[in-house]
Length: 477
Image (cartoon, rainbow, N blue to C red; front, side, top):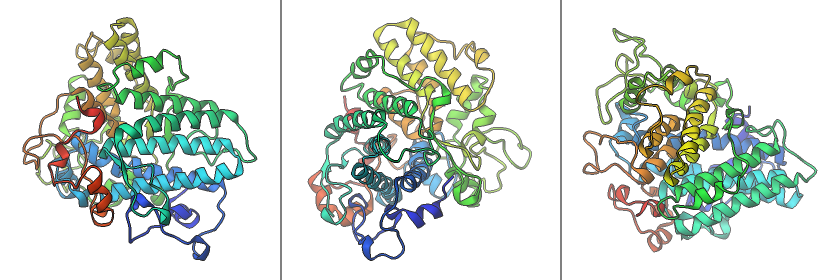
């Protein structure tokens, strides 16, 4: 497992910069910088890029959307701010910077592998860029894309509209799959690939599953896009053994980012939300004790209780609320990107919409079973017979169960809720948006300060809190 220190020591793109927009990447003259090597091989670039991606997707990219979706309900500090939608430009600076850091890492790998002809590395970099750009535009809407990642050649990149970005993401995935399947080049990934160990077939499944997710996001704009792709019988992630997840380490500097944030930091403020806890309790869900820790101290010790979204009752002593459990926040819990469970839920959703209830029912049951299997939970067959779980011809039922599974990738749960309106969520108390649950994040202050002209010429300068209420393109209907 590569650590953040290794990443910083070996990866040029891991350097931190100041002075201009993170979306423009780094204005570094690496030939004159003695702290970084000038020619880093792909087998060092790849794990460093993946490690950076893991810390970002499992950290800031999950905590903010996860609070909006009431997976988490912090009781003080930053987690509490997120829970009441206290999300401004300064709130998103770190997330935005980290996302573009990841993208610069991956673009560096792409350029290196293009020059060397190592097609597997090239394809992996393209698929992971499509993933990261996809998450970024889903969170923010219009973003720097075509002019981004060019360093000093373009320090004030223009913003591209989301409707222009999405087809290019699909194309990027297709190119990535094609390059991986060529299996050409002097260097080929092995243990340096922290997701699949260089397994080409699994990368093809990941690419196709990502393409399916992106097309499914367009359900309000292009209702048949995902179903048409499914009709081509693509090779998808259908078994949990092929889940796309980034492996984490067992030392403090390579630990799962949620473990670092909640356990190692000593913050004691990242409580879980009562919304998801109560849904799982109502269904006698056997995954409950893997998703969440029991309360640590006091008379409620051992019980699993979530905080009400927006509740500010102090729990620094861990006597009131549960925290994220071992499946997702132990020291070496992996960072999930796409899973078989998610894929089967997408199949179920599209089959239900088309009236194919046999396929919908089978996919729904398989989605839940794969979710259990992926985290080592037992009792899926009995769970599927619970009155509130057993399949009925209902999109709401499918999305309610998918919401529980998407605890593994909260940003994707947020995309689902915005598309479908499921599950029903309560509005956090004392919120900053006049009772409106956010449907996007605010552009960061760093962009306002440094790339303001491009921002103003594109989506426009964000109005605090009001920007949170404006749907992204694919969410408008």
